[in-house]
Image (cartoon, rainbow, N blue to C red; front, side, top):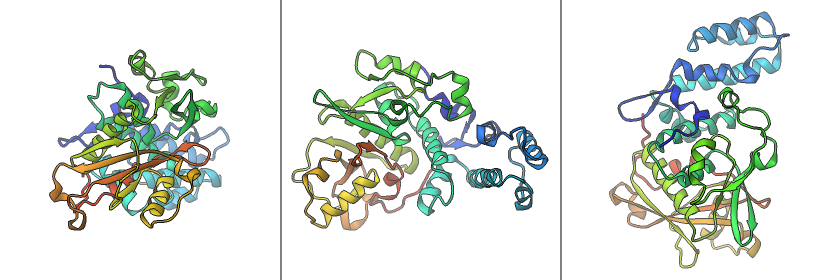
Length: 335
């Protein structure tokens, strides 16, 4: 098996005995190498000095006064956001623990890009050992928006940035080092070309078939099982369903903002027009291997997971909902 998602930076991290990711200086330095954090030629001496000092010691304490002394207001904001994020990571034993606290208590001003990057590297850890590249492609939905289109009767999801042509600048220094082309041809991942994913996993240029009854949703179900088991330590079984008939939404989790709204409407018995219902992309049934972990009022009942797209046919998954929305007695993260 080949490696994948090198751009996540997973190879720069250590792992604790339980499998969680431990922050390293090398991983922190990646953030200092981001284009917006490298002081330009016109940067003040304070900013240049701070950047050099953090490259030497990325865990160095930085005071508010140090940030306030930076001349450029945009640079001050960038440094404040980055250092708040760094300090949050350093307060936790693992990246998994840091992520779960963020999604439970609120991310504050931390940029969504940083949250998606955390999901990227944690999911890379959770999927270690997976050999089915269609599962890995489905996992991209956790941290990259997907544009959905109908093609010859199939529902296809492709990376929004890749097909939009807006991903011309490298997202991270690692992406730049990998030499990923700005424009890439889109292929639908299938049995014939699945092995090519290993060489192109950081290009995000393979589309996924999300047609009901095909293996795209089975692959996504496997990703969700792995995600929940790795971060929460709870074993579940998730199966993809092909229709919503005779579904009792005693407990449901929207896998994105649109799905949450729709689930609320269904639960409240509201009439939903056909156009709104057509935005449901997928439905899953989740059951716990050990029902004893469930809340008493829903013990033994299945949990339904709803995936939907926006009116402009975009899927923006919220994987944190799988960690905060399940009816589990004690939602403990990997510490």
